Length: 420
Image 1 (cartoon, one colour):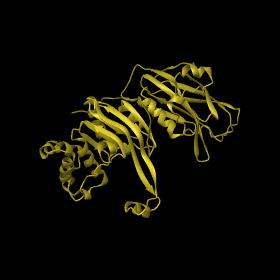
Image 2: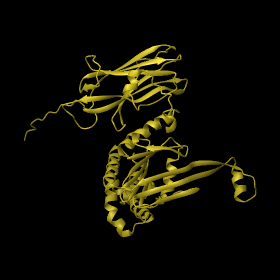
Image 3: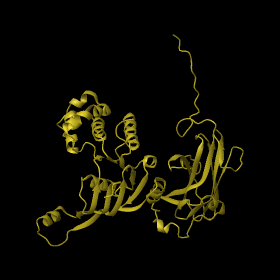
Image 4: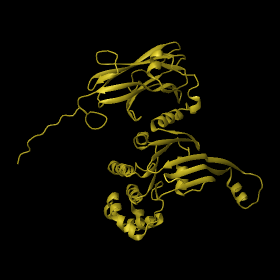
């Protein structure tokens, strides 16, 4: 394997045998039948992926897509049915936290047990013990059997053990959201420290903001198949399509059947991702400032409006008009819709045209932002996307005062003499 490759997965399949009855499994194991009594389920099908050293790669997908399975195969918890996996570097895996703990042992004993299982000597664990105890921060409970721990204390200790062994490769499966908000902040700080140190990180999460923030590249899985890989922004947009059954493979994405048919949008939306059933469409979008003037430059602290024009080609019970704002990395900063605001809960008829106006206070920090629009609704209990447009327009926020973070809370600061 090349020197710069930390993980290479080649043509990996993971197949499970599904039996209708337990007796069928028993008969096959005893060789009492020649008839095939099972169905094959592919948890992974011909998956290839490569992670370079020092790279942070995310894996996203719906439940049952194979995300956890591929991580377990990479870490050696599971064996592939076929294919090859090569890893260059010592791994720390935050998968099933505490899976190797002995419930009768106290916390200290379990630290040494887990460290030994990972491959550390007693001297190496001794050197890391205080860091682990400080990170877990469970006090004297560390001297009690872990079977007496609360679930919060248990995962804190398990996370502390896994994160403080100085791995070359860190593999994380939905493990950064354990414990209370203060412990979560500590976990993310450690994660960011690993990234700054140039560690290799493979990261699975449903938290798309974290995926967008931390990952250099993202892999999209669905039903055991690798669909695409690319920038976090592109893969998160594709994942959102997948969630509503509107995903199309990249080769089919530019087949001439562009839903946009208004020239004003086409000009602004070169490269805009869009999808939907086509039963209704977003036909125009423009932004006005607090004086009603069309512009994409908005002064921080002022009112502004996003205007979204639409056409309907079918009678719909109660369409939902939506608008959201993202930063250039693809992180959704804020958004709302007509259902949340209880501003439009009426039926529309085929042939009607509507304009939704989202008027808001601009409290975002100065910088560049992207507007995404949606036209959705419910038909019975089924959620339908009639038309969605991502990154259809940009907003430049002009500011002479930027505070920390995305939003300005319009704070006032007073400093008073507190006396002697």
